[in-house]
Length: 443
Ligand code: GKR
Ligand code: MG
Image (cartoon, rainbow, N blue to C red):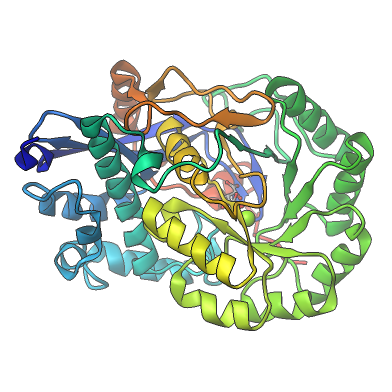
């Protein structure tokens, strides 16, 4: 094959707005529409590779800079996405996007040091860049796989399983967004333990999920303990997780751990930051997991040395792509730390990437999170289907998904038509639309 066919000819960036239900979390409530960015890397051979990441303005701005540096590079050379030239193009901590990202750390709407859109711990320009790089890396691997006729998992060393287990992601939620013009669904409200159990039953019935994670930090801890207790009664012996996104003090975290120690698979980010997590870990036998205090390689040594976490939730959007997710997995294996997978709101391109990399990780010890069942829209066709709580690992070339161009165009049109209110995810603002005096709470 002529190696020139693997050179990037063009990069297309398509920001979109996708429908999102009114899911509650510690930062507020999901907006009616949330931004995502679809990245298409087109090779000189005419092959199109797909990637997906966050679509808020700062990500889009960073993606535009990176996109300019790609033409003429080979899709085989994904390491070059981390080279200084690429970093410089993206601002490397000095451009307006980077400045805004760093400023997010003190955004009052976001709470102290917490990313308003991702609930991913302290927000930095470097983390933002990695999230953008992840979509480009995925798109390059998709293009390479399609060119060679190989699935992405083969480019990562090969799959070690034929299907990947996912867990049901339960949320306290409203029946509908405030106001008349938001998207609607038929899930109804879930604002108490009975509502959470009903939601879990529907997830189990429809998709076959066996593990259940409840997003916490919404109501008083007692109410969330009661919801987990109700789940344990309804689904005896099933893996259960509770994740308040760092909303609790060390004392509260320990009290919740005591109350649920016989039923929790793990407690996810009960308290905020490595020091607090280490204190909680020292006081309970319940395993602690995180997608907030360990989200970069720099954060690993302290957290592992202090025994702050027993499970890390990997996420290729956080860590800079599929190869780096495998590097994280190797470190976790080395230090005897378990591995699960985190998810924010995402579509089928990201789900395919998650499934491909998950298939290659021998140490993936827990069912992966996914928001996907909450999404009523997608840009891939056909839509993936969970059976028995699992997704089959595609052996088709690349990621194994095709872009639904009319759907992409319609969701992009929604982004173009938006008056700017939805283009940056802001769960706190969405909550204040219903309750102007609302403030993020801590217990
Ligand atoms: O979308 O509401 C949400 C979640 O809370 C999400 O943003 C978190 O990042 O699900 C995530 C988590 O596990 O922390
Ligand atoms: Mg979490």
